[in-house]
Length: 452
Picture 1 (cartoon, rainbow, N blue to C red):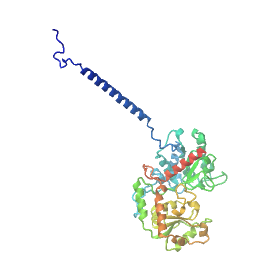
Picture 2: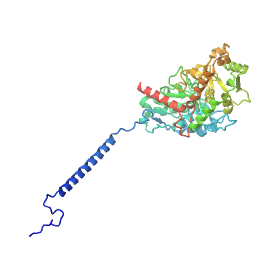
Picture 3: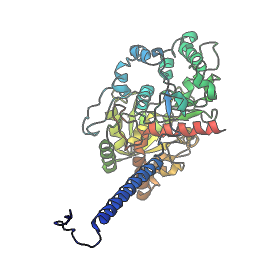
Picture 4: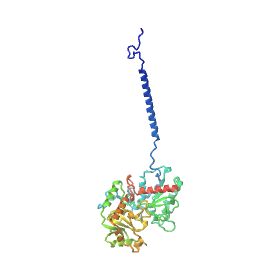
């Protein structure tokens, strides 16, 4: 008899063989499961590519900074000892334009963030702050605005007391030709360009080359009329392309804690004087109310006068002025050589409520920075009433009750961050300063002009 090969096998039964069928079915199911998982992975991969990317936070905010020849900025700083005929400005262009570090004396200031800053060096501070701007681009075709870092105020200032108009306008004329030769300028004719000056409008709007007229002619150039121009004082009734930004103070924080500490200090400071005035008389200036303001302060037992004409008073000392302002509830800000004053920003930095006598000292100027309702943070007294002797400043200020004074003071202190310029050597994202406000204003205006 022929032996079965399965005789000794477990499958020697005469029943049908099931194992091979089950085995094949298992393999098939495994294969199908593998294909399913592979397909799911492919679908997931395809879905991941379909997820939209996050929007570009710089869309509409890109700024291109012209890389101007050094003669328009850096070379001007190298000749810092020639910027003013009576003062060596070299110390003030140090530390990215902040000036020498200021040592706290008599605990008037907080421990850090303070410098001896000259108001006319704002162009250097602003340029260095621009280098920290988050949405810079080197691709001019994607830029929404174009910054021209020409130190026009410093350049003009070094020639203001000379009679050579050709020399005074030399760099400005070169800049005009340079910009008009650039393809970036041709796109919108300069409507998307902006420039800054650390001087007031009156120093930059000479209309004629005849005689020994004051100022440069930046603002009278046809090309510049298309640009946005930032200045420490604008001409609000004559030009729609000028925008005033704050004078630089001596406080340039490098971190948020420095800002908070300073706000806390001025909020808690005891203020023994109802009002004060830091300034000099203007006996030869027609229409000035400085004499009347000084006289009223001297006659009041509630006012402290810091006479800047007196040799013993150093009004250029940040310690002297900040001490006065911190000890005063109200700070008088009559016009000086021009309607605006740096002192207004120094006093608000000290938490002192400013008293203005001309709407052009603040209300028509710093619209990007100050509340539209001026009564929220300041007092207005007509300079005509002061000049004609129709008003007593002390009586006006005594009408404000404690609640009103507290509310105005708190508003002033809350405004401090956007009235100062941060230290451009540090990245400080949590504080929105005067530079940030200016850039927002420029971007909005440029985008609006382009849409027209």
